[in-house]
Image (cartoon, rainbow, N blue to C red; front, side, top):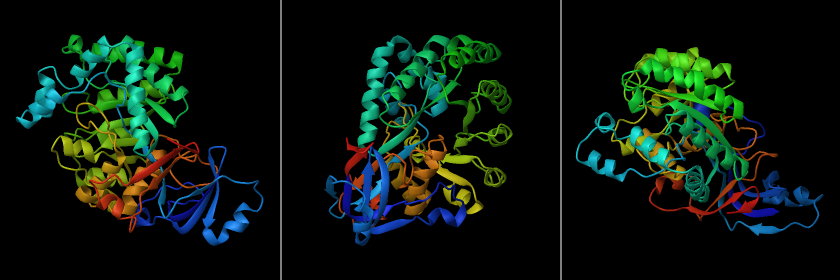
Length: 412
């Protein structure tokens, strides 16, 4: 397949690279470009004037005229809770009336609400609902995704969630990574026996997950009223023994040593980071941990936004993700995430696009398959509507600027 008359081919890279500081704003693009797709992968690319040389050794090609579209690699959403049983708009009303996130949790809402709903739902129904959501986010331009468990909070229900994610993986629609988040909250029966629930995670959940090879990563909600930094380390060290690298929820509501724990554990990413001090910013910048920022969660909860500008200027590796979940970010629209990162966190469009593509890919270890326009990677591509510039994409936040999405060389 030959795609011609591309106004701008965005994030073109010969090799994968993590970017820090000013380098994050250097987004490599080819104007007046063409692209060759073969067997669902990117075969080659260049300027339109190079078309004869690019197509010289190819048999007749199906030709698609991009008609001046911008083409970007699909978004890589490295932090989601896509598998859930029911929406939580009743809590949305509670929030409007002034009830806090912790207040909702204290009366049995929040994560415990989702766990109760999920416990009643069959694996088959859960899979059907998750698959529908996956198709929806693909149409919005997501071409790789991480999905967490954590709404089970029992051996049976956590395994059920992870088996659903495994079934989504097996469809081979887009790269899917599974994260075990049994340490998302304490179930009611362990409300006064935190040590007992941690033993359940370590002694029963993890061995069963390993036996069925159901997870790629392990996560813990390291937060006041949930899991302490010491508890986080204990759970993750057990996960590491089963080959699961940590990806951690830290510093969302408070600073309790989550950054230090992430560094000690050599976590792949530290996610949320709405509550950060200068010391923690510098610690993260001095590490290889990816700082995954979730602006739509801060928006929905009316919280301060993560200090993206300070993190970037300090030299931290920054990624963007949706945190798609029913309680605090009920949207998997990465276009909104990119816009909000620019509008509310003062990220440059080029920085936000990098953070939502190649850095998102690194944050779930799919950088060899996705995240940039690179020969050999999947042809998971966003075709925009006509735009005056790349900056127009986050600038025009209320408009749908995606014309079509290609996954594995086919339009969805």
